[in-house]
Image (cartoon, rainbow, N blue to C red):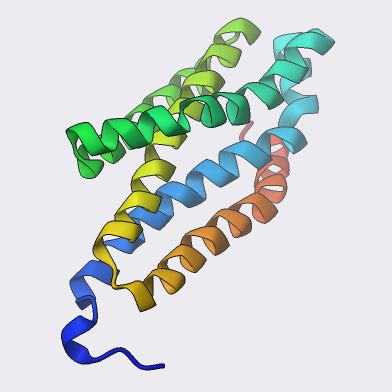
Length: 167
């Protein structure tokens, strides 16, 4: 089924998907890269078994817990604002987590990363629903889902490269 030109979203709208999808990609990489990098992280930070479990599990847990809150915040304060806060938080918390030598601080940063990614995902999903025409939403939702899947699939490779390379 083709969509009449008057009902199609503009090229500018589709171009806006690029930074949104990059935010989703980075989040998916952060979730899945940790598993492969965990042995090196455990050795460097002298982690207990319990700390290692929390390093892996706290991110998706925090994402799930804060997703609805992030979507509501997007409705209240604007999706663009919430996404920008999520991306800024993601950058800051990754930086802090990358330079820490404490397992406890890393666990806290991973929790904050999960909440930041919830802001990104909630903003992306609700933006797709709000700005694209009904027939185009399927493609928009497919793009974000495929991006998340690709990041999740490539994450373990990226985690291994980072653990073996720059650390």
